Image (tube, rainbow, N blue to C red; front, side, top):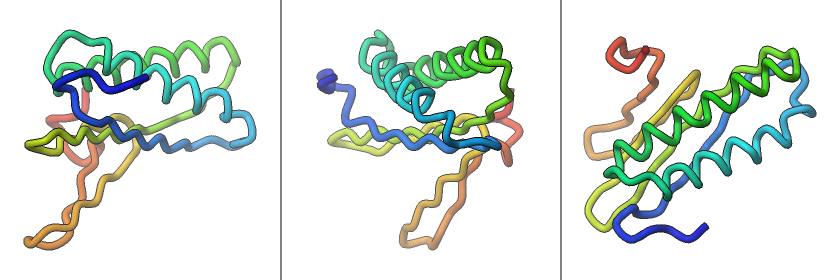
Amino acid sequence: MAPSRGKGNLYILIEFDAEDLSRVGSLYRQLLNIIQETYYNARGDVVASLTEALEAAHVLLQRYNQDAGTDIIAGATCLVVTSHEIISAQAGPTILAVSSDQGLQWFSPLNNEDFVA
């Protein structure tokens, strides 16, 4: 799917915590697709679109676990690069490390009560 005007370039990292990773190949592709499609088709700004995309991925993972009788846990980190800024969004057990002039900074939704719903 080609980027929409004004939405920037979307980069997605999905991390799994599962006993049998051989079973997650199809799920991995489904999660990537739903995040990308939802993000670029959403009508809101970048932050609202990222939120909608991660919520859609969460619903997909819940349905997958229910249908397959599994308890796969996944985390996602999304970065959007526009001509003016870089915006990140995270869900689940995942960590983002950013290196800048101020040093290395670590971001995780699990370490910040404002991000945990």
